[in-house]
Image (cartoon, rainbow, N blue to C red; front, side):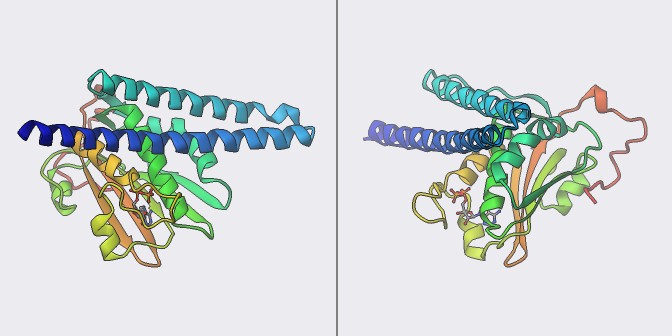
Length: 262
Ligand code: ADP
């Protein structure tokens, strides 16, 4: 019976993982078909010279989709994921086009805080998926359009700054995605990380995005926080473990100072 229980739990974990991958895969397919549509429009308009950018975008999304399937295969072979020193500002910059394409027209994306590289130790593919997911959720919360702000704190957070944010002691880099959308009720906030919890119409939401993000961030030694106000908008913050990087050591940086994103 013990074994059966363990097996059932394992199957559930696999179900959640594959469901989550399918969700990310779907996001990428949306980006690809969006790019293809644009290419078609441009060709019909006779503006063939401007399609290059969209071809690149489709290619980038296709490559990421391939990376996702590799992850699934890796999982079935029981390989672990691959955390590496990852400069979050660089990662955000590299996704700029894909993110804008994925959220579509009517939504402005602002990227704030290119102050440094801010290195964390995570699986970069997972962080990319998380960021794409957060932006798509933000878009879904703004049916009339609005603005998404992607912000990294201009310094890493020290113990004091962590305490102010109600985080366990440690050093973090932060990545926050803010929207000007509907906001969330207290009940939605409470359940948002539950697998399969969704407030979206059938067929539109899987309820897996945030639970995957939560699992990945916690597994990486980080924290996720939701700050939301009904009718005002939502900020989703990932606090990821800071990974010391020689390249960003500054003689003036004083870890004793409370450093935040403002
Ligand atoms: P899905 O997006 O498939 O519904 P998620 O796990 O990503 O699944 O999100 C769960 C729920 O959390 C959403 O259905 C929505 O109610 C809420 N939510 C997530 N992000 C936001 C946001 N930026 N603004 C408002 N609500 C959100």
